[in-house]
Length: 284
Image (cartoon, rainbow, N blue to C red; front, side, top):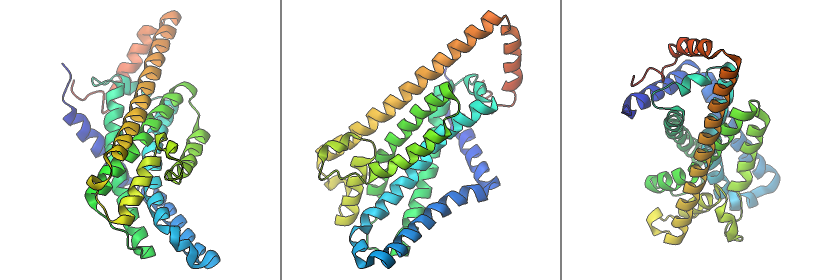
């Protein structure tokens, strides 16, 4: 029988909060860096371009907000698999009674909620710094923001699956984070076909709601349907890719240990490593 997800969710949340508390400099430095980028763009743009930059600054604020959450959510999944595969602790996740895929889904959900909180904090700081009168309806920001970020989570799962195969893909992860900027800034209103790309439709709808002071329920149902369909497609595709790559990795590992005649030693090593894994003991 599948154990309850409550102990796993609690363990993941406690671990993430503990890491934030133990390494505050590393946690805050990411947000400070993004905020400094915004400050340089805001005041530097006014210095060199004058008041004309303010005409498009509402979109820049929304773009920075989405890029902050998308980069953190995507990077968490990709870097987690990359680092654990390099450290040799990845096999402990497979030994959990929940299974590797469920552990990663819970970790992604907890990370998404934490990163969304960081993103809202960044949005408030940007609004206070710029003095822009954007409408901030919490329900609208939550609904559209979460649906917009889910494709980034799906891409994170996809890249995590690639990390299982190729191990060192750090440069590719950084390149993808930069690519999110182009997706968020895509001119959806001029080229509607771009709505099928990740982040584009949500960015457009969030800018529209904040600029026109409307709620999510006032948006056309067709626009919301596209947003939900894009989120489901990329999240489902990324999750499927991670499952397939992780299953193939396990099959190749079992075949290798069987051919080498070291399956007993491998099992002993895994049992020893299981003791240091918080997830492998949950629900046992």
